[in-house]
Length: 63
Length: 410
Image 1 (tube, each protein chain N blue to C red):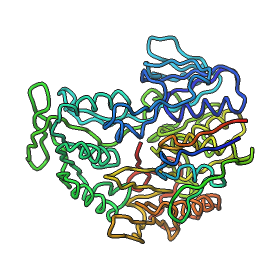
Image 2 (image 1 turned 135 degrees about the horizontal axis):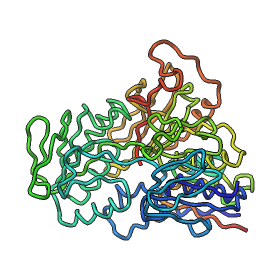
Image 3 (image 1 turned 90 degrees about the vertical axis):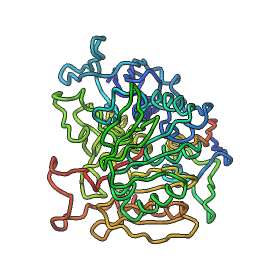
Image 4 (image 1 turned 90 degrees about the horizontal axis):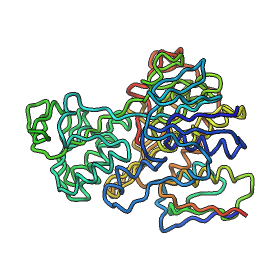
């Protein structure tokens, strides 16, 4: 399963960092960084993160 | 558990339905919505939706739910023993399990409802009507400088409309964010050309069929074509009166999210105990809360819920600045403005009994995420004992969200 974030849409509301901190984080410049291929155990949190995104910038692809 | 009824077709209700399906519930799901719309994103309604008629607010995934959509008519009563939701003269909806997610409704201005040009902003149809009204380039008065009123004022200034913002309190957002942060917001409004009237309330509206003048309590009459009433919201619980559930400024739920066996409540309408605040009941009107409580409601109905104490979080757009929070903020806590930069960025913390309970920032987002982690850990600690008469902790029914609790954005 893969995660893709459209960084041209992202405004760093950080709701994904709150929902799935093991997958999404902010770097020193407050830019979003993320693990594009998180493990299955993270998937419910990643789905919650995608729903939580205020600008709907997180896209998920199943296997 | 074959039949689940979900009263309220907003984000909390949708998330509950999605989580039920994800966890394997293959029985009926009936979505009962007062509005004619399927679930949509509410935060843009006071922001880009007012500026750009191509903004799409529909929430994805409603077709995949295989739900029965009962839209356009609200739930009007709950027969708890008979396990039925009433819908006026329409057939009632029987259920084995129920999610209450009816949200809140906008407070109105007493006596002003008869005139055209007096509007509230809560639902999608409200936003459509407001957007249509803006095309006539009205002179606007906004009553209430809370999250909604402040955001609407900022959005209308982006359209270069003349805006007078009337707030009874000493600064905007004083109750939810405290005096110093409210003063920063007041500065932003003034710097962007809003005529900010603090310590004043709207006393009345006059006009021939439609609003022409908005009268303040000091006798000022403001010429206006549009009055946006943004005086907060009330939990939508009228339909539950006398049904047997505990109602106290919302539907009171336990630490699992249940109001009664196989009856959960989620989102803006639910009032839950917060471990972070020593068990105080809180009702949170934030977007993220609707998601978290919606998912928790599904787990609770399926009997797989763990106790739950989500850390609230909101965001609010003002003139290119973005206010973001974690935890509990408000005038009732000890506010420490720890960083303030000339460019408008700031970071403020809120403490209660010497313990961090929340933070708000414009611009220091990574620091906010660190704060969130700390609060997550704290909320898993055993609650602190009450410390003296100022503590809000008390027996159920005596706690009050009041002036210190989370008062929130959409």
